[in-house]
Image (cartoon, rainbow, N blue to C red; front, side, top):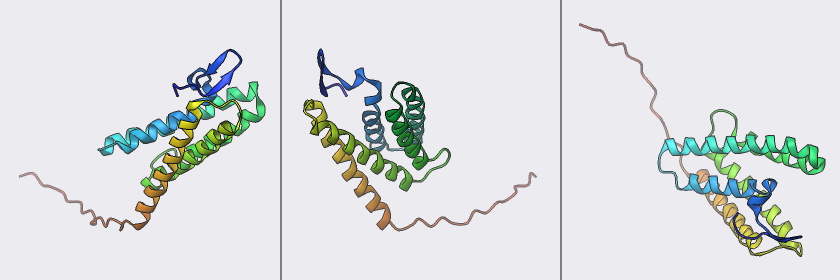
Amino acid sequence: MFLPAIRGCHGPVMPYEVPPFLPPYLYGLVFALLAAARSPRMIAAGVLALRALGALVVAGSVVLVVVAPPLGVAELLVGAFLLAIVGIAGTTESRIAASCLVAGALGVIWFAAWALSGEALAGVYLSLAGALGLVAGAIAWLRELAVRPPVELPAAVATVRRRR
């Protein structure tokens, strides 16, 4: 996000200078933090961050529709799709992993398109490698979830304590 991405009219353009370029980087950051999560509370915070990021992408795309309608509509669809995968309330680990896979795949498409242009700089190539790593990690995550045996929880029993 802080490396030169493309050549601009007055020198290299950094992704943080152009807000519509930020979502792939921010999704990568959230998934990196989720990968480092060591408690259910940290995972819940990561899911909340994914939902907030999806909502910000949708809100930003509404503004972008005014400036560049085709790009704004495309970003609106992508943001809504990513938000729908994670869900508004309650989620599962497989939905988080699927969201990681979709965000990574979209990142690969985004950065590959920039890398194939004649204006790409080092930041785009490193971001493409990071997006490919995110896809590989998401595939491994989904594979692990598919082969993991389900956890059998015991039936809950409610009791009433009587005071003496």
